[in-house]
Image (tube, rainbow, N blue to C red; front, side):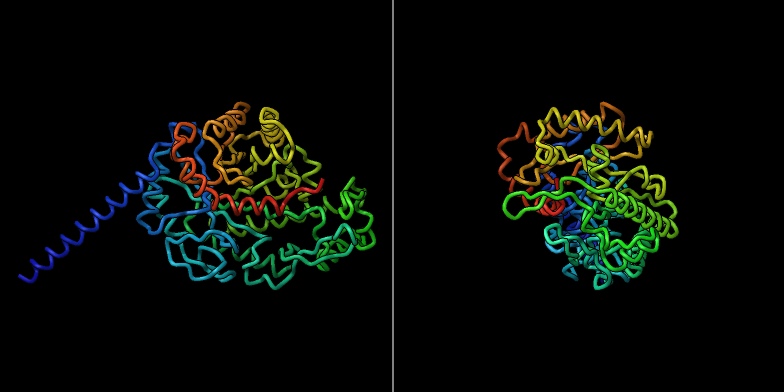
Length: 433
């Protein structure tokens, strides 16, 4: 008799669990009604995930079901937590900043990555862990070597919070982080766009020593002569041009970053031989290579020759480009097509290029209409079948905004929080003219 009661209780429990899950599933699909694949072309199979509103593994599984139905095959999932980032609450957070996987090199916010991988793989979706590097001030080595920058107005060197790739402790810490990350059942790693050195970085003591050792030149003697400056307004200083010594320095920094990237890729693959590595690149890298070398110490042919990452994720954010370049939409579409052509001259394999398209306006926080996302994607893929990635994922992608104006205010409120980190990031990296 006791056994019968136990069996009956188990039956009631599993019945309740099943009905609860079905109830959650119905509620979830009601919130995200409308198959995206009716609105987004089939070749748009990638999406970058910066925020998850799901509160349990069950809801996460339902999201993966939804993404699968919409035709997505790869997600780029944020595995780091900077100050100001929106927390993932599927598992209880244990630290204010850090990463979402176990490592001895950074605080662990929660061990969420295996849960995400399991849910995604169950639905045939690949997971790329999206990680930052030189901006990862939560690392245990963050008290070590920092990047120093040149203040244009005074010519003085100023210490920043960013981590210097010339500090052996920072290099070891990041290599260890990549090794620990590669232990998970991820399909790839996406390196964020902070893996750069800007036009006035790095003049830290260790970087100066490395430059002198490598080039035989004492850099401090040349710093004040790097730039041709002009006044902009009463107090502002603007760069009017660069001297030959600056270009030698930029090319050297570019090579050093490429060598460091090669080391990080090697470290990850020693742990997981099948892991793919992609790296974010600014649109200037294709549109204006000389400016990219000046502003970011980034030259893709050099990066390809030395480090050879599996894929390049071009931040071809159409609305951002319109504002920064002060161009019309049609002009931006023309430039996007030109960027694809340049990319294929350098690396002819279309599958190694990912072009990321904005889904939210960083400045206004408003969602971009689906028909405009499609037009941008069509402009890019009209040249060659390169990959398209939507950035970032947001619930409004589940419906066609252009035909559902009644929900636009609700969508705008939810997307504002998602857009905020990208607005801050892009303001931080505004280019010097």
